[in-house]
Amino acid sequence: MVSTDPQIWIAAFLTLAATSYAFRDNKVFKFAENIFIGVAAGHLVVMGVKNIRDYGWAHLAQGEIIYAVVFLLGILLYTRYHKEYYWLYRYPIAFLVGNGIGISIRAAIHSDFTVQIAQTASPLIASDAMGTINNIILFIGVVTALSHFIFTYEGMHQGVLGYAPKVGRWMILLALGASFGNTVMTRFGMYQGRVVFLLREWLQII
Amino acid sequence: MDVPREVIMALVLISMIIPALNPLGLPLMVGDMSRAWYRTVDELPEGSVILFDIAFGSGGYPSLGPGTIAAFHQMFEKGHKIIMMATDLEGSMMYPLIMDSVKPEQNYGAVYGEDWVFFGYIAGGQTAMAGILGDIRALVSTDYQGNDIDSLAVMDGVNGADDFDLVASITTSGDIAEGWVYQGYSQYNRPVIGGCLSMMTTSIKPYYDTGQLLGLMDGIKGAADLEFLTKHPGDAIVSSDILSFSQTLVLIFIAVGNIAYWIQKGGNS
Figure 1 (cartoon, each protein chain N blue to C red):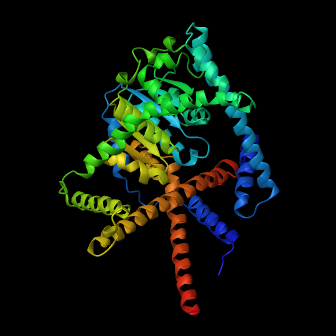
Figure 2: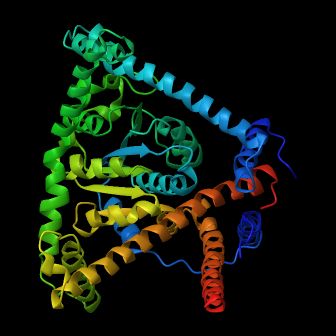
Figure 3: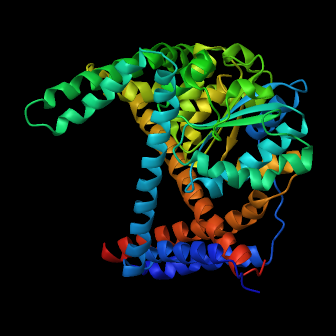
């Protein structure tokens, strides 16, 4: 029995309209696309205002004067639309970039370099055979993939040494293949979620 | 030789409808990463405080929603306190959808404000993470419903990173997944678990391999594993059959495409 809930019908219609693009671009798809953009933009504005109110204005109203600087920086972002004072928007941008880098750089170096290098340099022999095989593959993969990007020493890509970058390229291709396979799975996962919705919530046949 | 995309699309659709109508009941092999997620939550003492970031929107819901629901079932069942937030703009729209499925009051006798709280969307990515882990009250004064957080029992004694026994995030964004590793693990040395789309797994898994993530829920597959482990079967287990069936079709497409290519190439030469 088909659902009688108008919300389900709207969701079902928009699902079908959005997926109709897979067959051909059409007006129904455009309609769904425009609705999505409109709703997303509206939601963005509401959430933006809510964030300003909850995480900015609330503090300023409690007497935390430093938040006036935050508001000033926020307002300066809009000077980019002014022909004469557009340069002022660079200050909040500089603040945002500096703040972002300052917060993440130490942790990024630790997580992405120190810990990863330490793990790669760990003993090849693990407690079980599978672990040992994994370690060997990891070690060969890292060394050969890195060698593929050594361009300053010509000898690296010639003679016996030349095998290492070639193996490295295969390793990179294998990694890209795994990544692409996972991407296909993710897209199918998203689509099947809507198919299940149509069959269960809308048509109610499963 | 080009196969019209309408034909491929129709075949994909059929390959999803068949197992949805007649579940095949294909065996589910639980992966190590999901098992590690489950074990990490399971081994926490009752009443532990978990910071949970719902960092996905409607696009990611079919893949990550079921896993988030299973994760909350386990956390509420174990009697943990959950501080929820969203670093994704649409996270606050996903929160009611998830809670409608988990039903913590009904199923576990949990009470909003005593056992869990939701802060809503906090802009800023890693800046927001650093703010929450550094000093919650300097950043957040009210929850999503506008209640003063000091009036909520769940927030008693919870001020920053040291008060969280676990940091968890489920996200469609690589920046957010990495951000929690950077801030949670590297900056504040907290145990961190993460969930992500399958397409992100190859870039996020190195954090799991190096122990920076104690558990990793890998898209719909990880969600199905978690539903199985928590004994709360849901959409992900249903999806496993559909995905196995439809992706077999993809393998057939790839094989047929390659064979056709080589035959064509042989004919041309």
